[in-house]
Amino acid sequence: MTVAFDHSYARDLPGTYLRAAPDVAPAPRLLVLNHLLAADLGLDLTEDQARDWFSGASLPPGADPIAQAYAGHQFGGFSPQLGDGRAHLLGEVMTPQGRLDIQLKGSGRTPFSRGGDGKAAVGPMLREYLISEFMAAVGVPTTRSLAVVATGEQIWRETKLPGAVLTRVAASHLRVGTFQFFSARGDQDKVKALADYAIARHYPAISASDAPYLAFLDAVIATQSRLIAEWMGLGFIHGVMNTDNMAISGETIDYGPCAFMEGYAPGTVFSSIDHQGRYAYANQPLILGWNLARLAETLVPLIDPDPDRAVDILNERLGAIAVRYRAEWLAVMRRKLGLVGEDAGDATLADDLMTAMTGADWTLTFRHLANPARLRPLFDDFRAMEAWLPRWQARAGEGAAQRLATTNSAVIPRNHQVEMALAAATEGDMAPFHVFLAAIQSPFTEAEPYMLPAPTGFGRYVTYCGT
Ligand code: AMP
Ligand code: MG
Image 1 (cartoon, rainbow, N blue to C red):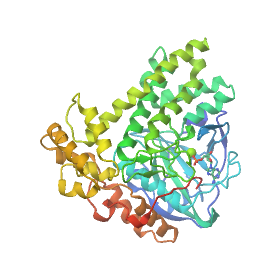
Image 2: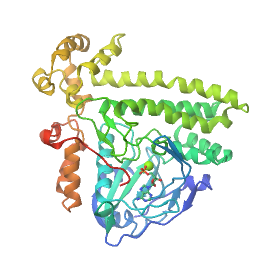
Image 3: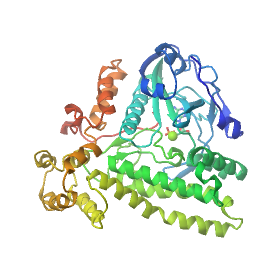
Image 4: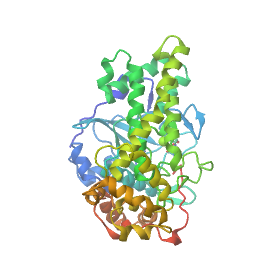
C-alpha cells in the first residue's frame, strides 16, 4: 500500500514551516482506527500498517514531515511564535472531498516546541477522536480523526500517563494565527502568499474577484459565522478559541478542553484556565468577531495602499459579522425547533425559549419539545415553558415531532460518559470507549445510557488544557 502524498503547502509556501521528523514510538499499539475515513481517503491499509504509520514507527512512503509556523492571541495576549510544537504534517492526499492534510499530533518535539515535550496522552487524544467524530456525525465542519496509537511511552503530566499519537485529517491547518505569524514580522509577501494559497485551496470561486482579499475575508466571516452558530446549536463550548485555534477552512479544530453544556446556562465555562470566562458558551459569537478582526488586521496592506482607507473598508466588513452570525444562529434555531420556512416571529420565539429553558438540559429540551411526558422532567420549574409551548406548537404545526428527531441528536458526548470512557482507556481497557464511540457515531439513534445527563453526584465539570 502506498499513499499518493502531495506537498502543496511545502512547495508553494517556502519559509512558513520547518522540516521535523516524528519520534519513533517504542512499542506502538493501535487503539482505534477509523476504517470508514480511511476508505474515504483511499487508504486500504492493514491494522499493522496503521499502527506503524500513525505512530511514527515507520512513515508511509511519500510522507515528508514538516512543522508549520503560526502565532496566536492566547486569551487575548499575543504570542508571536507558537507553531506545531507537537505535530507533524505528513503531507496531503487528494480525495473526492478535495485536498486533505494528514497530520500526526503528539509525535514529538519540533523546533516550535518551546518548553513542551512534544507528546500527548492517550486520554486527550481519544477525546479529540471522540468529539471530532461526533461533530462529523451531526454534520458540523470539523477536522477528522483517522487513528489513535498508544506509543508505549510514559509521559509526565501531573502524573505519569500513557502517551499516544492522534492522526488528524483536515481541510488544511491554516489558522488565523498563521497569517498573524508573518504579519507580526512585517513579512507582507508571505501574508499575500498565504492568502493566495488559502483562496486557491478553500475558496477557489473568489480567485476571479477584482477584490480577492476582501472577498477572502468575507468568505472566512461567512464560514466561521456558520460554524459558531452550529456550535451554539449543539451547546458546544470549544474552550480555547485562541486565534491559533481558528481554522481558515471553517472547520472546528484543536479539541482541547472543549465540552458540551448540559443544563442551559449562557455563562458555562469548563476549562480550568479560563478564569474570566472569555470563552464561555455565550461569549463564543463575540470571540468570533474578535478573532476575525485579528485576521483582518493582517490583510490591511492587501486591501488598499492607503492604510486608513483599508482599515475603513475592513471595519465595514467586520461590522457586519454580528448581523451575519445572528442570521446563521436563527437558521440553526429554526432547524432545531422543527420550523418549516421563515416567519417574522421566529427570532422572538427562539429568544423567548432561551429565557424559558434556563437550567434545563440543552440537548433533550429540543429533542423532546413535542413530548410533554419527556419534556417536563427536564425542568425544575415548568411555568415559563407552559406559556411558551403553545406559541411553538402553533408555529411548528404538523410533523414537528419527526423533524425534531432528525435535527436534534439523541446522543451527545456527555461529560461523565467521556470521562468514564477515557479513564478506562488510560487504564488499558478500550471496551467502554468503543461502545460509546458507536453510540456517538449514530447520534440520532436513542441509546439510553448515553442520553442521560450527568448524575448529580458528578458535580461541576472541569477540563484541562496543554494535555
Ligand atoms: P494548543 O493549546 O493545543 O492549541 O497549543 C498551543 C501551542 O502549544 C501550540 O503551539 C502547540 O504546538 C503547543 N503545545 C501544546 N502542547 C505541547 C507539548 N506537549 N509540547 C510542545 N508543544 C506543545
Ligand atoms: Mg492549538
